Amino acid sequence: MKAIHQLSTFQNILSQYPQEEPLNRFLAVYYKQNKQMGSRDRKIASRLVYNYFRLGNILSDLPKEDRLTIAEFLCNSIPNSFLAHFNSEWNAKTELPLKEKVEIIKTEYPGFNLADVFPFHQHLSPEVDQEEFYLSSFIQPDLFIRIKKGEEKQIQKVLASADVNYTLIDQQTIAFLNGTKLEEILPDKGNYEIQDLSSQKVGEYFMPDKWDKWWDCCAASGGKSLMLHDQQPDIKLLVSDNRESILENLQHRFALAGIRGYQRKVLDLTQNNNQVLHDYAFDGIILDAPCSGSGTWGRTPEMIAQFAEYKIKFYSELQFKIAANVIPYLKVGKPLIYITCSVFKEENEEKVAKLCKEFDLEIESEKLIKGYHIKADTLFVARLIKK
Image 1 (tube, rainbow, N blue to C red):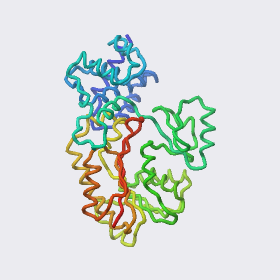
Image 2 (tube, rainbow, N blue to C red; image 1 turned 90 degrees about the horizontal axis):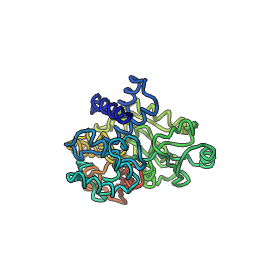
Image 3 (spheres, rainbow, N blue to C red; image 1 turned 30 degrees about the vertical axis):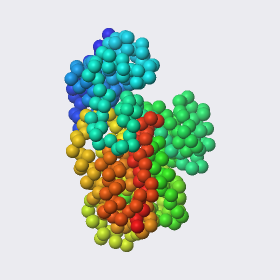
Image 4 (cartoon, helix red, strand yellow; image 1 turned 180 degrees about the vertical axis):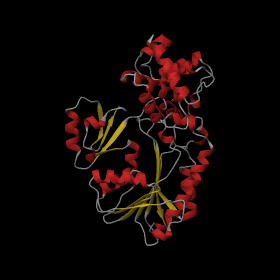
């Protein structure tokens, strides 16, 4: 039976998977080593493994195959052959709303507790609707792009002629099903950026003026800087990160977007960099802080099993140390844009309150951008003004 073979493949993958490695990287290597698997086999295997991890700690004492059947019921909205084999009654009910599915499972498994899907719930930001957040764990987020200004009509023209499902969010934002091969549909990467919807929304807090000097201090591959430059092309921009390799990726993305005349520096912001930055003063600083990434675990559900609670304190202290080393270069009356992709209060509201107290900042605005009900990531952003 195909379902038995699929279960065997799932068990084989799980037995070989090293928990500290990103699941997508491991699967890529696994499929290269098992070239007998066709594209459909790989797709089903990936679905089963990812859905299994979406359960978090729910009913963790059950055998893996039973937990996988529960995951398949919760995570799929259409019937499939795997679920038909292991629980045909549930397979006939896959189109039911998630809350009704949960009640069906509770009937058979009274120990089912939805909160177990996210074992760190006591750390959640107070703005999180906990039930909705838990339920979102069973839904794969969409793939979003941000269209460069002036390229909207061209992108929509290409999509109109392509056989692909998409949703137009607004003139600059389009959502696709995760796994859509954008490189085959939109080969010109210079007129759009892959960027989560919630990540795009933090740009509303930038508000740069012409000729401003801005610093994207944890720039990574430059997604926030590209958005900032799209808003105001005449800014003077410094981008920095502690990894030369990732700044090379940023340089490539900037070249595709036609951005020139910016500065880039490799900086370790846990250290005092005054010897390098003593002459700098900025009209705005973007601090997209290193964090737990807990607001993005819908895309990487294996992290629920890999993450240790003590790391919340580690990231919270790291964020404070970095902020302490960048705030001195912010002009009075100008904004620090503090961003995390976390749902933990220690990294968000509590961190902002401490920064305001220690560094004489005031909150102009702050928000938890709730992506969990729109198939997007959840981010936190605060616009803090230096007094």
